[in-house]
Amino acid sequence: MLSRIAFSTLAFPDATLAAAVSAGRRWGYSGVELRLIDGELIDPAMPAERRAQVRRTLAAAGLPVVAVDSSIRLTGDDPGPELRRFLQLASDWDAPLVRVFGGDLDPPPARQDRLRAAARVLEQAVPLAARLGVAIGVETHDAFSASSAVAELLALVSADGVPSDLVGAVWDSHHPHRMGETPVEVYANLGPRLLLAQVKDARRASDGDWRLVLLGAGEVPVREMLRLLTAGGYPHWISVEWEKRWHPEIEDPEVALPQHLDLLTAWLESDL
Image (tube, rainbow, N blue to C red):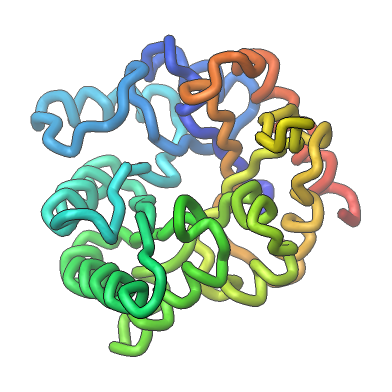
């Protein structure tokens, strides 16, 4: 199943959706993670005709949507309505997942209040998610960059009997590593709840900042991540998240995306 490798349209800040999915298909990718459409962040208020146009573009490329990525932060102000709109949008495109961020967390004791509020947002979205057949994945990002924080949130949601296939986690390979977590720790915290695995590599510079680099050129243990996913029978997608939109100085998608796919394929076909 790990041969199912997708790419994020975040790699194409200056291209139309049609050009992005055509290139991805030509390079050998099997799916697409939607973050940008025609170079712009996705608007959940997109009118019906525009949604239908996107659907036609994707169908013409023959690439399924593996996730629709929102900018929703569960601890933000009233994220529920936007989450419901994104769930409907994902359903319109036959996507199995909406990606969300956890958002900010306060120091204790207010931290627990924030977590409970985020859990309520997820719980309230579950009936619609179930009806549409679209899951919600909380990414290891921002104040939830450590998988332990995402696991803490999911445990609160699980406590109310929400099925794990409707609310789970998105494992961004970089952020837990940046927080000092090993892939073994991430998998122990999130393994059964993983709905998407996002791959990127990076290297810490002398100034302490991180620089995104081509796969295998950095220090993020992506290969160990894949080994754990394979051994655990992970059934979902691997997605290459080349963040050209946020980091225009990195290589163009024409360089980065084929390189990532070639190396991921080689690793997955080996014994890892």
